[in-house]
Amino acid sequence: MCRMFLFVVIQLFVSLYAQRDKKFFRKDYKYIEETDSFYKIHTIHKTWQDAKAACEMEGATFFYPEDETEVNAVIDFLNKTQPFHWVYVGISDLLVKGVFETVDSIPIADVYNKWDAGEPNDLGGNEDCVNLRINGFLNDDKCDKKHPFICKKKRSMLEWNQFCYIPNMDYSYNENLGKCYKFHLKPRTWADAYVICNAEQSYLAVIDSPAEADYLKELTDKTSKDNIRGDYLRGAVLLGFHNRTGDGWKTIKGSPLEDSGYSKWGNQQPDGGVNEKCGSMFYNGRLNDINCSTKAFFICEHDVDILGSIFDERNAN
Ligand SMILES: *[C@@H]1O[C@H](CO)[C@@H](O)[C@H](O)[C@H]1NC(C)=O
Ligand SMILES: *[C@@H]1O[C@H](CO)[C@@H](O)[C@H](O)[C@H]1NC(C)=O
Ligand SMILES: *[C@@H]1O[C@H](CO)[C@@H](O)[C@H](O)[C@H]1NC(C)=O
Image (cartoon, rainbow, N blue to C red; front, side, top):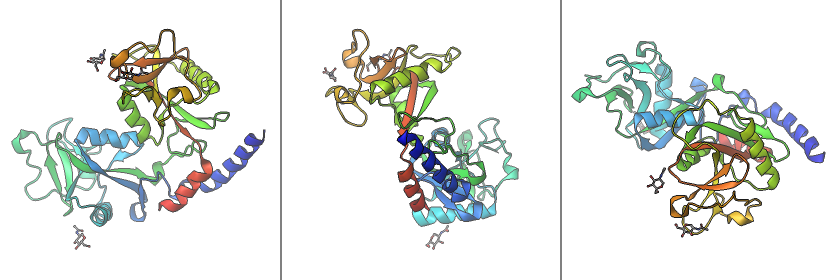
């Protein structure tokens, strides 16, 4: 009861403070006043496709400049904070050669489109992805080259999950457990699932108690997964424990699985030896070892530390 009351009071507080006008998206994004948008410069170089996917995973868009104001503001931010002389932008002619469009299918003529002298030149016949040089001009480049890039979120597009204290609306709050969860229906390998949860400011779910195991089983049962085609393991969902370091089963938080509050293995499990070093849960709630290169559904979670989050937000911009 007491916890419930506190939660309602805190939610009231959050709803007053956490709206769009707070100008907060994520701790790792910087708000720029001139464009009323949030930006993150990714310093780990990626191919154009991987850059696009990374922005989507963060609930953002692969940045491209919409106009002169934005190109100036973003180049200024880039120049002040990073040593890069160019970044990939969300423009390509991958769909139809010679027709450059943004990642959201806007013709380049309708956004910022100043090419550098002699560009685009489709050098070697395979330059289909666009980068922005620090001099403010665009250039076509090979999509499989790895470059830094920028992700963007417009403040007007921000939808705030007030209960989970993140922008992802598809996380749902469980009041009794004090955590937010998302069941991912696109099957992935354990490591890819780990990356996705991390990009969503969460982590691969770790079961702390029998009550949480019951809830994850219930969440799994009620999620409709019959129509998901493809090559993946049916019957288990990936969770945040492993024996990848070879020194026994432990959670991704580092504690031995047997001390985690829930370690009920399924019948005869674990049974995979060195070929199955990643953790999953059968649909019946029992744990199972799984080949780390096997794709399956997975669940991400995060704790809801509302007061801590507000503190972060105050210090963000
Ligand atoms: C980058 O910053 C330096 C130092 O402030 C400045 O001299 C230079 O003109 C800037 N370059 C661009 C492209 O804005
Ligand atoms: C963890 O993996 C190592 C091999 O990498 C294996 O020797 C060991 O038995 C495994 N531990 C458990 C508890 O299964
Ligand atoms: C399982 O793991 C082994 C070794 O890591 C690998 O060679 C094999 O292809 C995997 N099998 C499947 C079905 O993913």
